[in-house]
Length: 108
Image (cartoon, rainbow, N blue to C red):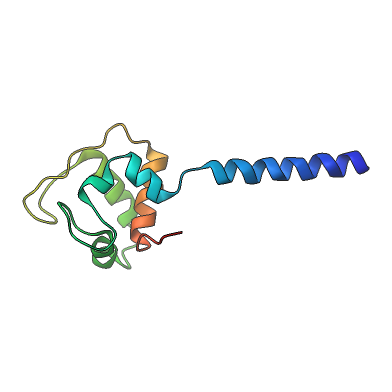
């Protein structure tokens, strides 16, 4: 019984370690090139994440729309400068990044 408890404890620690190894949404945004044109609170080339969150606040179906917009790129929603497509970003990472942006891009 004691060995079983030790194994279960170690398994729990392994799960915590692998969760801690996952990059944060902010790190994913950086590694996918988002931070080149966007900032959490100030407009750069593209809108600030706060502005994006404010614009789409309360729209329950916006997550999928924005993931597709980031994947395919486009122009017009925020001005004439087009956002380049990000076809190599994984669906999972795009969903994490967009969800983080829609939450106001919190530091944690």
